[in-house]
Amino acid sequence: MERRLAAILVADVVGYTRLMGQDEASTLECLNAVRSEVIEPLISQYHGRIFKLVGDGMLVEFASIVDAIDCAIQWQKVLIQERRPGEEHRRLSFRIGLNLGDVIVDGEDLLGDGVNIAARLEAQADPDGICLSEDAYRQANGKINAEFKDLGKLELKNVDQPIRAYSIALSGADPPGDVSPTPIAATKKPSIAVLPFHNLSGETDQEYFADGVSEDIISALSRNRWLMVIARNSSFAYKDEATDLKKIGGQLGVRYVLDGSVRKGGNRVRIAAQLIDAASGKQIWAERYDRVLEDIFAVQDEVTAAIVGAIAPELDKAEQQRATSKKSGNLNAWDVYQRGMWHLYKRTKEDLMEARSRFEAALSQDPNLSPAFSGLVDAYYYEVVLGLADSPAENCERALQAARMAVELDPDDAAAHCAMGKARIVGREHENAIPDLKLAIELNPSLAWAHYGLGAAAVFLGNADQAIPHLEDAIRLSPRDQHMGSYMVRLAEAHLLKRDYRLAIEWGRRALQQQGFQWSRYSVVLAGLGYSGKTEEAARLITECSAHRPDFSVSMVRRCHLYTHAPALEHYLQGLRKAGLPE
Image (cartoon, rainbow, N blue to C red):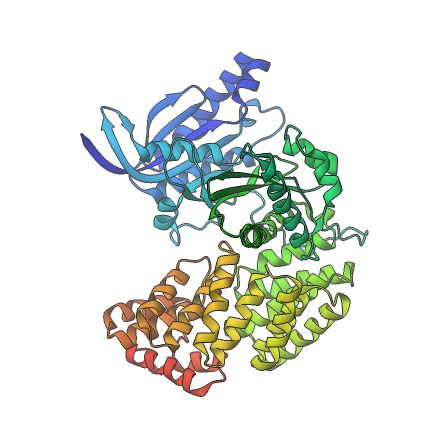
């Protein structure tokens, strides 16, 4: 067999069967026109080759995954931008899947997992969307001007192992620069219904366990003050009914629906859950948990915490995506706040300034919107820790003022107390931050950032042994968190404090794989490399980081880091010197 590495693109038309049923001749004419006028010229331009046509779809090979992704982006953009009433051939909508993998050559055809995975990812893409594998993402990231969204690990049909996938934002990826809020000050926070989990064990005595998981999730989600959770009596009215999640979401008037199942076998239990967007029916998140059933209540508590910790950041991402795709003239305070969060996670100086502007605009519409004050704390915090603040002292004072407002508006909100802890940390008041963060965890045990904050405070105070369990809890609770880079950096620094340079380098490298740029991800790896004598790799990282931060140096790290324990900071800086970082 002849094998080779290839970038594979698979595409097909959304709703093709329906379109053919409505007007077969016109649909075929439209498809042929789009292929000849748009798709084939683009494939040729990006050095691709169509190796199979399947009805409304096609399979295309590229030598370069960068060319394949560029072609896919231009393909979708052209069809979106030129779709006008009266131009029938512009009305077709495609899904595109991309993969980089090993293929088997069979004449002009290509076979194997490299092709199969691309085909399965195509089915996961949104209409007018692009879905790509982790292998494709890794090779293209940093080489393409595109916004990637981590979709997590997906269970794909006829693929043995879950595949991590990413989507590419096209239309609506860049929020409009102007904010024109609606005159109505209503916040319209997101809402969710947790349906009773299905008992698949065939044992009626397990019914209480399935119901208990659902009830605990409802209770835990209700601790998120920004989220409206449908009461148990309403959602349990659908128990034992055929589940049409989209229909149920409409009947309950919620934006999201969480559904799941419990299956017991011997002394083991499997709990599966999925989160869907009620309007589109699209799955946002899904996960499966396998546990040994020694203590039924301990398992119930553990899985509940895992599910709640996992879906909270997924809801955040979904809300940001929803808000950025809305037109500026139809924004309420919550939408404006979510646009601010969209900018916040980009963490450039310009985006952080824009995030503050959005949070202030949201508060001008709804002065009682506590999360917007917490968002201001985040923006001020990141400007300081990333070394982007014009006046760090002024930022720290403003962060503290915003945190006080958040707590005053909602003293029972865990996120508000978490914001207060964050404001204390950025002001280097680590001891004072601890009570706020502990209270946040008491109010919402699944709040990953509060666990991280306790770990970060311990690192900055030089206490690695105390820090590590908190940081590991944050990572476990929210494995797809948009703060994950920070969680991993602090864990790397904790291991650096313990002189475990192998783990410091390992966690630092994992942090470097997370979205966005943070100088601290480079510096902790460099410190570990310095103590390990790996100066050649260190030199490459110094060059790479300096391209983003020309002032990257020992003195910059000393100025920007939040350590108050002098020996811990000096140990860190000495590792950077050994790595060759200039003073």
